[in-house]
Length: 297
Image (cartoon, rainbow, N blue to C red; front, side, top):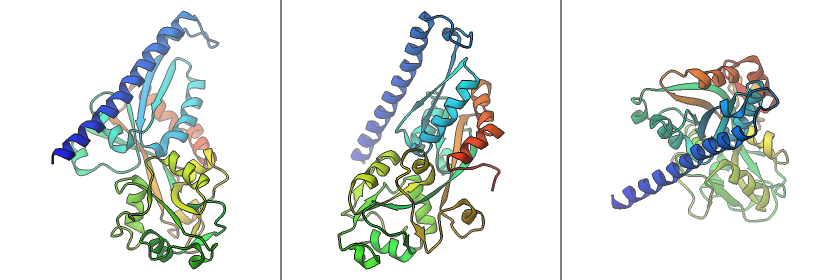
């Protein structure tokens, strides 16, 4: 019990440190920019408002794209995004009034449903497994994936790959994509985490690890690969390609919902940004970058 309290306290300190840095960044930027006078749009930088966002790493690449496009159209509004809070950290920070918009990749837990927060889906993103480029396979069955993640299959040659030990990369059991695997991959929920696997903490680090560690396998999402790691590709599962058409017809059920969270109904500049994401321009950006915009399913 004492260890859990200590870990919770450490997590709170880490989240608070991120938020303080973010708020300080907003304030410092406004102070510095106010000295420089009007910007190219004719708006003085000191007049800019600041929207703070944070949460799940699954959002970071696409929210960055959407934010840049929004700020080009709305030069009087600046968006600041903090990293590595996770879905739970994003929810907690919105609830405490530390940020304006939380970024979540899972539904509310029972204890979060009573906080008076708004859950606003804006996209779905495909998830899948990827391997280091030296493995040279394109398909795994669900049984083979379960075998790899339970150490029943330990060499790539057992699934048509090279004669080499499989380097397994995994995430914490509460990670949003892991929740999808537990729900959709038969037997995965009972597998736990393989003791010899390498535990990865963020989406970005997972993509870096798959790219750089020979003979490795891990899971990722289509958006992150499209935006940051085009050299990687996701495997077929049971011979089915990771494509949105296959999600829509039910043949590839491995996708997760991305949502925004606000304290009560969104208003003001936060609402303006959310409306932009759900506009035709937001939909165009999402589609071009490998996401399925809300309402397209």
